[in-house]
Length: 116
Image (cartoon, rainbow, N blue to C red; front, side):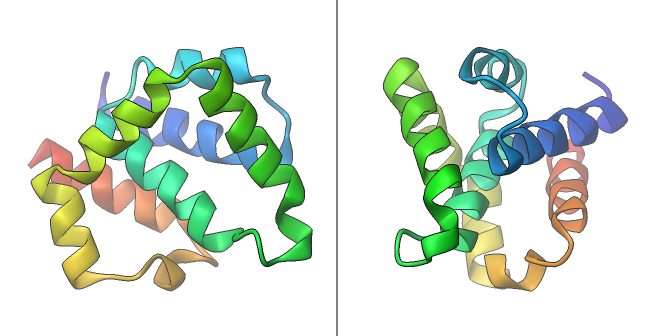
């Protein structure tokens, strides 16, 4: 998958979960094509931006629960991505909060880092 496609599909996944415009099956289809780091960053971003304590986050949380409940291997993909050195670099260097207003910048940065 080329860089632009990776960025587009990662943002499609993020937006699909956030806004509820993609069914879990479509989200899973995207996840199966993405690098585990991109999947991990995307899902971790959504969990950080929409924590359970935020009343406005119930839709996002519900969709994440549905996705991981229907496709339990997504949890493994997220954990594998989280253990990757690029995720560790991100966690040491940035905060998800830095990208709350611009998730495209986050995704683009991670894809560029993956592409080396």
